[in-house]
Length: 316
Ligand code: PSU
Ligand code: MN
Image 1 (cartoon, rainbow, N blue to C red):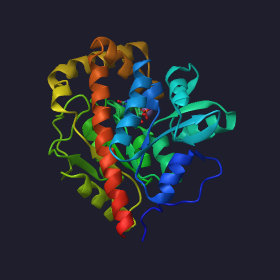
Image 2 (cartoon, helix red, strand yellow; image 1 turned 90 degrees about the vertical axis):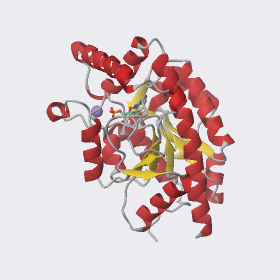
Image 3 (tube, helix red, strand yellow; image 1 turned 60 degrees about the vertical axis):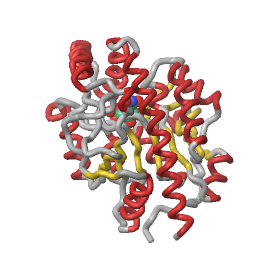
Image 4 (cartoon, rainbow, N blue to C red; image 1 turned 120 degrees about the horizontal axis):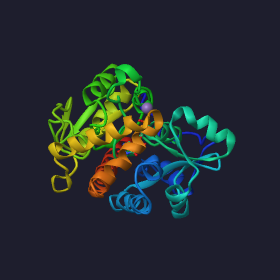
């Protein structure tokens, strides 16, 4: 079987909390959570409240949460409340994608991990289900800028299922789908035929594959890895209808935020944090409320997927 090992050897450079290590050893479901969403994705103090709440939701739904970050140069799987507070409020927390990991580790500094870096560290620890809000992707204008998030290349190589609310239209959703197809990454619409666009349930793009239960998602994960097809999966879980900002409404706001970003000359790794912050300002906080609601919703689904995947491992 090529399925990723559920009980890997601990990596000497990565600290796993006793609770998470015990859960992995026992086959108890574990859900990884990222930390860039805390440090660079939401304002303080809503960010730390969200981080604590989401860990609680994962627990209520029968899985152990493992928030991932780098603290004092040490990659950490599972954090204490004080660590979450530090990530949410400390001014010197670097946004860490995969290429940044060696640098923050070597320098002994703090880093909040993106989807890409969280996937890598989660896989090292033996965690294969991961919950976030939104995935990085191909930026609008990437034909000129080449700005394609390392989240996509990581999905092409690292065996982790990423539960998200789709892809925000600050990105080019069509080009993001093309890239995921090239990289061999299944994109599953959960209970939907249309790919969701983060704040909105619709995007105008179809979901490449539809699934309707967490068990079906776990079956696709197992089938992929049992076939020896390395890499991740995207589970696109639409924001609940009562929390969505309709595509027509958010579209103009995103266009305005993008224009403001261009006027300021902001690009590269600062683009996504700037846009998220600007959209919160323009919507007077409504986008933040929607963002938190969709992360809660993803945490419930992620815990259910981790339970189903763990049950399959126990049965095999
Ligand atoms: N989208 C969000 N919130 C976030 C991010 C994306 O709605 O916090 C973060 C995630 O950590 C994601 C990262 O992995 O931005 C992508 O950044 P980049 O495009 O620089 O790879
Ligand atoms: Mn980028």
